[in-house]
Length: 268
Ligand code: GLU
Image 1 (cartoon, rainbow, N blue to C red):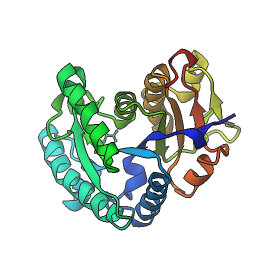
Image 2 (image 1 turned 90 degrees about the horizontal axis):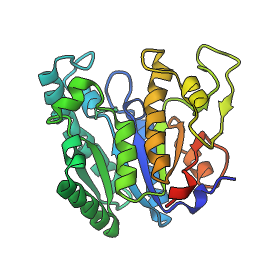
Image 3 (image 1 turned 90 degrees about the vertical axis):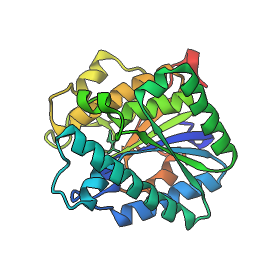
């Protein structure tokens, strides 16, 4: 039995493929619908914290580049441009519903530093208390390590944010419907897995390891996020961000996407 309707503090992770077209330009219809539904969830009394990607994608789009730059210095410059664009868009779109947003940019160094980390928690608490939606991203203009080592991905970051902000649900919106027994794009017999009680080696197996296809490779960072979230006592849901209306169904406890159940001894 799902208990999503009872969740009060939700971290929502939005990936670049949800926010932008392949051109790097904003997906206006998708974003308009998402912001409307998220605003409604917020108005229903839930605390919402967004972890948003898109800085590099929108920055590249704004500069008219055909693809994200490979060079680290250019990546950082593009991210600085795109982050500004990203927040401008969120600010404008949420304003339509009289909701104030705030930007917080994180690096691994901040998370690993106890003082900075406690400042982060306090700021989140204050913002949420003010009825503001904090929007978090990695500080890609600065976080060289993450970019160089290619672990600068927001799935794991969103799980850490969920843990640090005392969320009771992490919701990852992606371009896939959830976890399947195989890769649904290549395997027609692949079946959806609606509930994961425990992340076993079999589950990791169906999610695929690094170096597999785009979809399953993307799934492995989500499994990593699920490990962090569930160990911290937080349920995690992966669902498709294509149709934001489905969020209403999710919060009415309908079977949408895949839920990874929190480990019981740690449940918040
Ligand atoms: N922080 C990156 C950006 O905003 C995205 C990382 C990710 O998509 O996981 O472009």
